[in-house]
Image 1 (cartoon, one colour):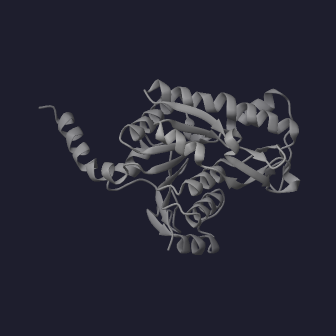
Image 2: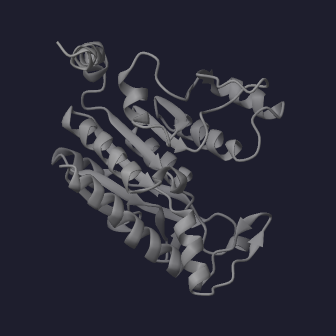
Amino acid sequence: MNSDWIATARTLNQALPYLQRYDEAVVVVKFGGNAMGDDAAMDSFARDIVLMRQIGVNPVVVHGGGPMINAMLEKLEIETKFVGGKRVTDEATVEVVEMVLSGRVNKRIVQAINGQGGRAVGLSGKDANLMVCDPANPELGFVGEPVEVDPKLLNELFANEIIPVIAPIGVGRDGETFNVNGDTAAGAIAAALKADRLLLLTDVAGVKDASGEVVTALTTAQVSEMTRDGVIAGGMIPKTETAVAALNGGVRAVVILDGRVSNACLLELFTEHGAGSMIRAE
């Protein structure tokens, strides 16, 4: 008998407890611009999401698209200004952000999932007032901070076995359009859903200790200590801040993992060893 078949059967057998564990669980996946990669990587991610739905998980995809936004702004010759290293989103910029995220990027992911046999629907935080925002910082213009997330529409989609794919565009109290950081949006949506898992796909293997080794499990207290000591630094700080906020909001666990690894979501959810760094509350 073919050894590959035996290995596949053994893997499925070992996955059974995890398949049962996540039945009807809500898993929010932040799919970042760098993790999107090429068409093959997109199709592989889409298959993972479809499989999750097929075995009873309720996946939600929240995506970014920074590289695509930058390319379109450059193409349209719209100058980008920065305050404190953060992009100022004026009216012209937020129009481009919404066009790229809610249009091109969102529909590409929806098409990939549907192409793998799933049933995905593309949304933004504007739909059904899913994500109401206040300005995050007046100096940054139309950059939003989620203050109200209404999960009713998402729960209705779950009931119909539909996979929501959400662009991080929020609506203001007076109908303004806000650009929301993708990780921040994913964390807020996961908290509103009281998700079992929030998976933050990034381009590193996870949270690393002082010696450069990935820490596979840590608490919010350890995150605070490592940040204070400068071990968690740079671009990992906003990701761990998102994780802590989501945990404080009722998410059971957050995992920061390398989205460039094939089947990263499945490895995390359905194998003994998992993938990346899992953060839990105390």
